[in-house]
Length: 497
Image 1: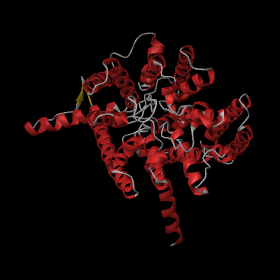
Image 2: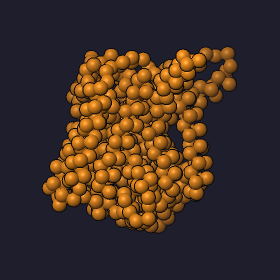
Image 3: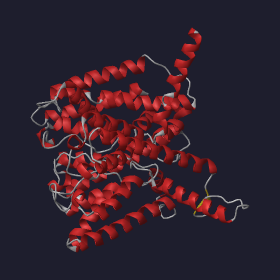
């Protein structure tokens, strides 16, 4: 699995090499060398291994290990191109920055270490395109891509997809698991093409349109400009991006079924209705709050809509022209920032490219709390958690409860560690939420116009990159990947004794 995943990454680096040849050839040699190294490593891993046991524990190990290997090898283009080499820092910090950007890319987080000290627009087009491609590959899922081309994983394919895909589980939408994986990628590719054409139509150049389509469909948020979408200052472009974010943050099973049945199949989905309802309420409240702060109604509506949609879908773009501008939510009143923090935590729908806890888990939590209240009132009654007219299985309630507990422990632990490392409390808290939810920007020193170099030390960024990996794999696969190595170690010790 890791071998094929690296071959896909090598193909992405090769495409980026071709892009660099058409634009000053600044980083073409570095990218070509990176293509050879990553491709050779992928070929070696694939040809020297064979399919082994595929029980649940080995599935988690396979998925987690694949993401770790891809993230590590994803640093090679940055290292060879000298992307993060700058005066005053040593090789360890250069590697940390490269790994941070690689993990942020593949997890579609959007957090970046580019900034005033190292502007994005100073980089070559090849390395920028590679950076955008990392988010596109990671948005839908590297493992889903592997399953779609590797028939030998048929027996465990749905388990692999389920271990990687965000949410409470993945439904089979085709008789064969490989076909299910392919359908997800067809929908994803179609959405990317639609966004690219729309952005080109409304004023972006071909390179920028394709680059931003890759990171809009993945709800990643990497941009080719230092001021993100604020560079264009275009309402039309922002509306295309918002629509793209919303489509990408909806369960892809709904998209696939609507296309297959050729009819609008969303209104019957309770998670979709809750998601859209929360966004509408959030936009309305923040618009009114900004209007009370002196913003014109039009400006307040524009900024509220863009930032609520961006954070609710874990998009990560900014539409501010600079720090302190009206579109920079880090300069907004505390009441609006608190509401935005809610969207940073909750995120989008299950089975989408969006991050966060997910609307489905939020609803299951509320349903379970309501059941507890009813059971206190009527202790002898057998009461089930319900969502609409459907009963929620107790196993799913327990899984969500376990997820929320571990999520809370990780947030508290991360906030404590980051604060000890010298970051202020607000930035540490929002940074932990942002990393676990793969959101990108946060509050405090990591607003939409800030760099994570400004907000966190190198050790702090190491903590956050691990949180991004844990959050992308929905906590359990990343933690359970150590079960097989632990068993192997224990058995080896016992056999020695």
